[in-house]
Image (cartoon, rainbow, N blue to C red; front, side, top):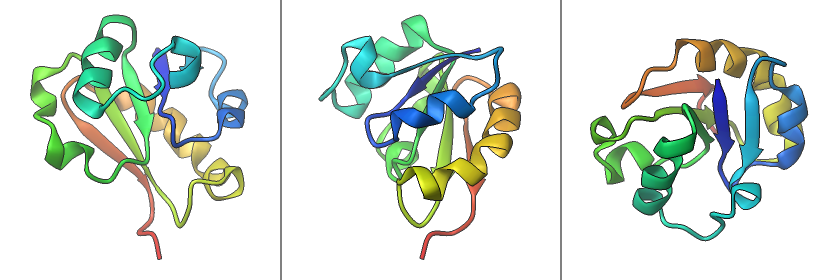
Length: 110
């Protein structure tokens, strides 16, 4: 799967994704600063999954119109230490992800 890590995620998470995933950051893709709708439109052309912590993405966008799956991480913060423990579950979610849908990984943030 081709995975895009949103700007709000530490790039060190790339090393924790399964070897069968080709993953890059939004910055590496050259899309830093793009707003959600613009980012989703660009990402659907090159990626299968967007990995993000953006809580509002599913409410602010009509995701069914994008050929892109969203895996949304739910954690107390967006530090590597908060997110690294979720990465095994993220790997499973990426495999189950379907375009136009959101899969949540993790627990309720404090």
